[in-house]
Image (spheres, rainbow, N blue to C red):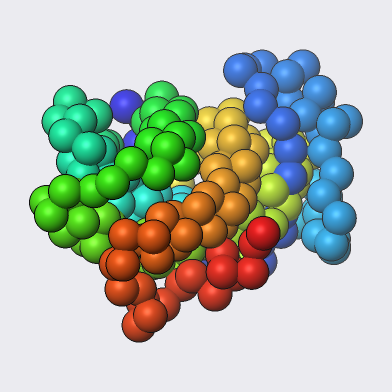
Length: 220
C-alpha cells in the first residue's frame, strides 16, 4: 500500500480532474478533461496541501466502512463484514491512500444499499447492527460536507501542475486518482443515506438524535 504522510503546511488549497494511471501524458489528459463549476482559481499557480485532505477523506471513509461492517453483519454476511472492518483499519491510520481499498468501499456501498432496498425484515440482532451503523454513517455524512468540491479542485490543480503538491513524499498521480474517484463515492453517501433512513423508519429504529442526516432527509 502506498502511504501519504499527513504534513501540515500553511498553504492554500484549490480544487477536479480525471484518473491517470501514470506519466506526463496522462496528467495532461486529466487537465484537459478537468472542469468543476464553483471552484474558483484552480490552476498551475496554486499549491495543494494534500495532507489535511487525505486525513479528512480517510476519516469519512473510516466511518462509512465501519457502518458497512454493521450493515453486513445485520444480514449475516460475515466475510463482507470482516473485509469492511479490515479496510476501516486502513482508513483509521489517516495518512494512507489505496485505490483498491477505495474501490472496495464504493462497491460495498452499492451492495449495502441493494440489501437495504430489498426491505427484508430484520431480526433483533439485525436491528442492533443497523442501529450501530447509523451514528457511524451520520459521522461520515457530517465529515464529508464540502469535501467533494475540495478534492475535485485539488485534482484539477495537481493535474495542471504536478509540482503544485507541496512538502513531503506526495505522488501527484496517486493523489489525482484518489481525489478524482472520491467525489462520486461522497455523493453516494448522501443519496444512499436517504434509503438508509427510510429503512430505519420501516424497522422502527430511532435516528432522531443522530447528526449528519439532514441533507439525506431531503432527497426523494
